[in-house]
Length: 91
Image (cartoon, rainbow, N blue to C red):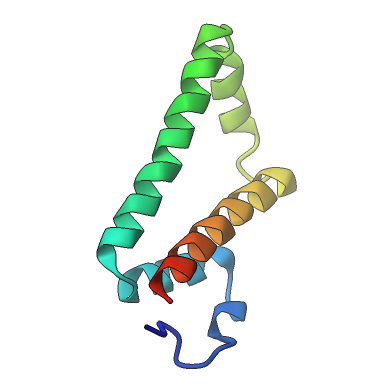
């Protein structure tokens, strides 16, 4: 199944917009599975931070890094990873 109209469609736009576009046309079971995997990773990271007593620092960083370029790059990387995981399973 080719979920792109053109092979290079996924190169246009932002990683976030590409994820939402692909998630609408891809197999929903795959999209849900990949999103669940990503949220499980987040839950594990939060659990580790709590166990190390880093919740307050985490909250502080969340508030202070809203427009941080490094945070934006990491977020984009996660969207790219999601898109890649979804696309490879839909081919």
